[in-house]
Image (cartoon, rainbow, N blue to C red; front, side):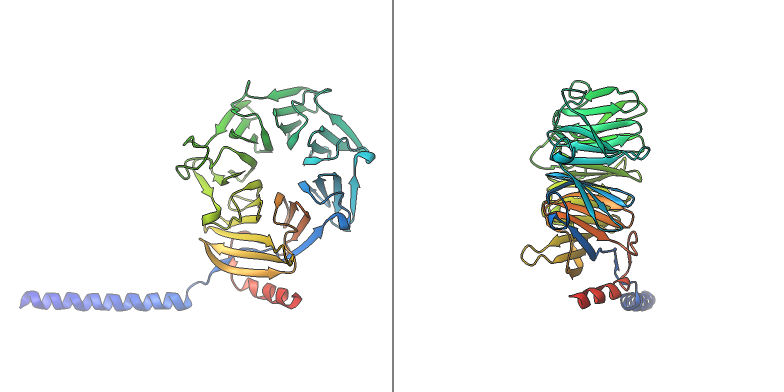
Length: 396
């Protein structure tokens, strides 16, 4: 009898706990925090040959204050953000080569450095072009995919290695498989930040060059499988790397078979089938912070808006109507799908440039300028979208 009474009391206590827990759960569901959302760019402007670009196929963009430099398949352009006017330079205007594939601005001098696809390297300053190529300099190859300014040096990523030009001493240094850990020498991209130069290479993953010690470190897929990423998050997802971007202690990488985030200890791979990426085929990447990165792919623009919550914004253009669409997703769950009059000009995105609160996207059919008044990092309550969505619907 004694044990029966104890058992009954235990059951009563358990029942009370379950009831209280259920009540708390119900209260959390009905009055708990609503889903939070990232900033979505809903205001876009397009620049094409119809508005003054020398060509619609855009390979590179570099924002420099009120000026936005654009490298195209047939010339160099400069967009004035204040007026929207475009000035362009072709070979008849002194541009050494018609195809502009890379751009960077020297922050000390304001000089524009231009990578030429088949024409070498150029500097544009004071209205004049200076030209370096294989026959008059230490440039290892004339097909230049990427350009980056590192202190007094200019790096050029080419199809036959990388070249480093010291603008003060005039000295050239060439890096190939002979003096660096390049298993392949086809350099797709180069970037510089915080004392490190990062090269994205076809077949050699990412190479990191420490400027202070002039030593190399390589990042390869550890499983050694070219076809697949055998073990996830064990390293870079694939050795065909197309772009690198280092910011706030984080290295972002784009490849032809997925994307990466590396915090110095841990790798994280991103794939189309499990994220908001529109495609695994990455053409370029631009990190905005430790938790936000923009990936230019062959099927649209994938933005990891908040890494901790796995929240994405995918920007695409409907090829039939040319209208834009932004899809917000979190852990593969769609939170919002916003139809817009405009988004990116074309789904084949080749470049991304962050410009304060704004973004610039280079595509195979022109430049898209995403204007971001009120841009914020991370996530905010869903209420911030009400006015924005009402406005878009009114415009539609």
